[in-house]
Image (cartoon, rainbow over all chains, first blue to last red):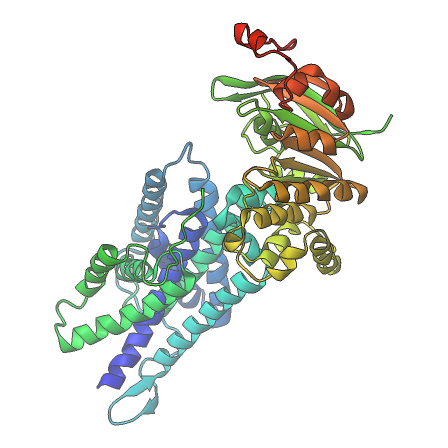
Length: 291
Length: 259
């Protein structure tokens, strides 16, 4: 049974890790916790759904469309809303992201209603790839974990090995110094929001077949992703990913061995405990800036 | 007369409703080392930030021309791309990036990728200690090393004008000497230098021209050799006492003829 639990943990851990990474990318870039992340992913998932079901596109094309849409949506949030804020404080940024979240939620409710829909990915939940007495891996499980890992690796390569990644890191650490070296900081920030939105959309598309597609579908993954990010340390990209998988494991073990009713509460319990003992998270280096 | 690479014409800069620069004008000859001297709060850094476009919607009045192009109120990125390198006050290296990554950020605008590693080697020629620290995080470097890194980073873009804001700040005399020793070789490599300093002695010895700033305006200027001989400069900036007797000084405070 433990093996089966671990597989489920990894599947949900992947989703949480992706959501946590999405939040962390923008948080590192701008110190803005983007509460619209979940709804942005939800809308992007609807784009996949519409492309597949209404327009009958093939899967690859639908995914490419979704990635492009998510990227533009992220840039829209930064360019049209956050950048326009006059004399912004962190609080006003948070309110803007919550406003954007409600806009997207309203939009989805108006366009698609609150019906629960089934998204048809070409990976089946009923097709078992490998089975023993104690556990089974379905095609969907494997694909979810694989795609999550691929996205995580791509983001790692982007940040560590490319010029864009270097510019992102430079802007995160010292925006003025980045500008003094000719980095267009506004554009880099917008691109960071676009990339984070793609990562979030990946989580949305992967979680949709596990739950059902409706406008509230990302509430739970968003909050769990946020908890995972706090657990790992919002500013450490490795930390939040590990935090995501840890949360998946803890939550599922707790749900099975202790109490299924309180399974969802674990995430928030973790936030409270982490904030109490290690406010900067488990993996964040506590870097004190010299004055 | 040499060509003017930077011309600053009567600029006024405001912080909200407070005017910080009251009409500042100066120009820099191509291939020279020019220094701006002044005490804390004189407006030196404000002048530089205005030139670099780091203050929104400033200068309020006046114009800045670099190499014949207007750069007043332009984006910092654009100004840097024209060929101005900036070494900010307090160094502002990227703490969590390695020395090498810092230098690569400096080369962000470079299109000729294959020459970049040669230029990094050239920087190590100026500052050998950076080579030893190449994969260390910049935040772990000493103040002097960070200053060297900030200068090297600004040079990575191959600027034609290098602006340095108080490179001697918080450094030991030996390090100040080392850094000022590099400045002439930077100029000899074809980079015009604008040096803003409080350390008047070192700055005037290094520079060809000097400007003296007080309360947001220039009060004196000239060739640095002449400035070093000027009695007011000697007393108020170089700290050389002119009065023979202590008595005379106690009775009245010597007045500067400018300002």
